[in-house]
Amino acid sequence: MTSEPLEAAIEDAARLVAGASHLVAFVGAGLSAESGVPTFRGPEGLWTKMGEPDMRGYDRFLADPKKWWEERSQRAGDMKEFVDALDEAVPNDGHYALRELEEAGFLKHIITQNIDNLHQVAGSQAITEIHGNRTKLRCIECSRRWDIYHFDIEGSPPSCPDCGGIIKGDTVMFGEPIPHDALEECAAQSQMCDCMLLIGTSAVVYPAASFPEQVKSAGGTLIEVNPNETPLSAHSDVILRGAAGEVLPKVTQQAKGIVQE
Image 1 (cartoon, rainbow, N blue to C red):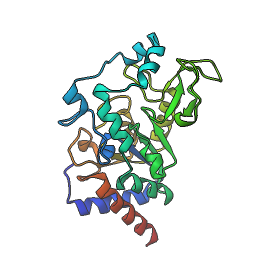
Image 2: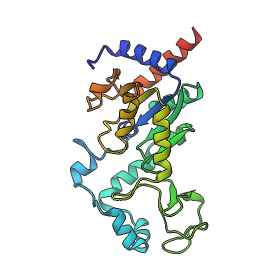
Image 3: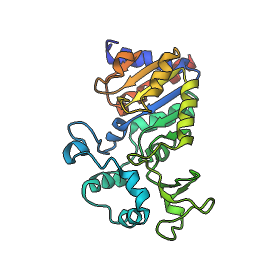
């Protein structure tokens, strides 16, 4: 689709948002980048500067989980910049606009590829984190999760108090299957979705990339919010070429105004 002037696109997006019966936001790294979290790919991406990470991360964890837990407290090197940025990041206006859309009854669910917990800090409630959450731990057997700050870690590696399985960080490693419960929820939300906000993502990594495809093939509409063209642009019904922190609050306010008319 050819991009239209931004203000006209915002108006069109607001009408789609106000008229949707099940609006879902599909969020990628671009939203967190506006909060200072480095992306992985692209000109300034961590992997672009430092090289691709070990693609056998999960296999190495399974081979020696004790070693992973011992190294976890000494995180440095390539990932130190990323971890430091996560520690300092705070939600931006795009995160708060999503919370406001949820509170107003428009937004039914957020599917996020980000691990930074910023949606929760901003106050959003209905969230599925396809790649996990850095502030949580997860049992690899039963998928039970705990807040990392309120879990008494005993032993190395710690074991699940419910099933005895090994506990790891909730974030999904390379080579690790995406937790089944997260995939099921994403699939269910995509099936119900008649309008999807695509925020800061090009959705080129599967299975995440399949969610917008499902919505579009079922007759739903796609609203892309991204300062750059992506593979999704050609399939989007409305394109908002701008930062989410700038355009999403405008969409939110106009959608609320449409409902009040």
